[in-house]
Amino acid sequence: MVKREHGPVRGHVSERGHALLLALFVIVLTMAAGVLLAGSLSYRMGLLREEVQDVHLTALSDAGVALALDRLSLSPFWTGTLERELGDGLVSVDVSNGNRVMVRLVDVTAIYGAGGRALRAEIQLSDYDPPRVISWEPQPYSPPRGIVSEDQDYLY
Image 1: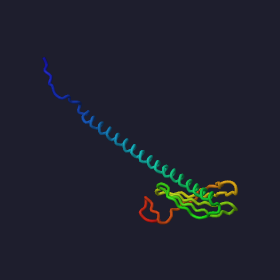
Image 2: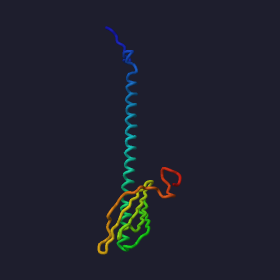
Image 3: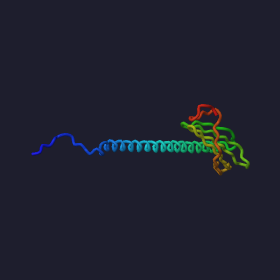
Image 4: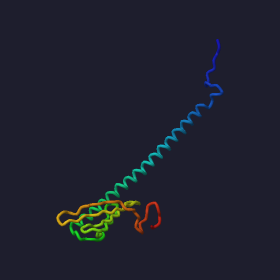
């Protein structure tokens, strides 16, 4: 009878270390997938922040036009400037006489976070009806002096 030794099973010399290399390869692939996923999530969060800021600026600029309509419904010949803090934002409304009779120009500047939006609207006044918006167009926005941006540590 032949006696067999009981001990660890040893593979062929060329197979040694393959399991370790395979494990390292799987770890590297998992880490790469994690890095790609984190980058994708970071990018999407940035887009979401921009979209939230855009929605806030749209609401604030709409509120500025609504402030002008409200003021003009109470006093149709009023011109001047209104400034209001609404939530975390700021709205500035400037009402002036338009180029036509019974038309007021309304310049609205909305600021929220590090962004802003400007627009110009024309409001038609009437002896019998409430004021109504007849035109609305975006304007180039330039930050007012003295406003500090979150991305910059100096004053404009």
